[in-house]
Image (cartoon, rainbow, N blue to C red; front, side):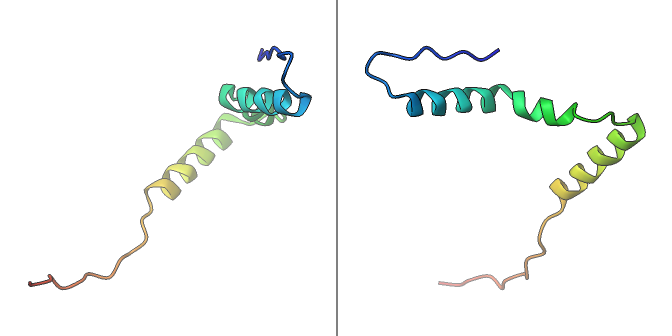
Length: 69
């Protein structure tokens, strides 16, 4: 559980921003979204494979001729 202590000279908005950043870093919201619905193991594998394919895909760059000085 993320916890933030509000200091005397700190505004509520600033403390709320720190709390949101802590929650994001801890992965609380991502975990909550992940467990919102049951996901079958086959669907999980399919999603992970698609993510790996997207990650490994590179944009094709045209080859450039070597530069000579």
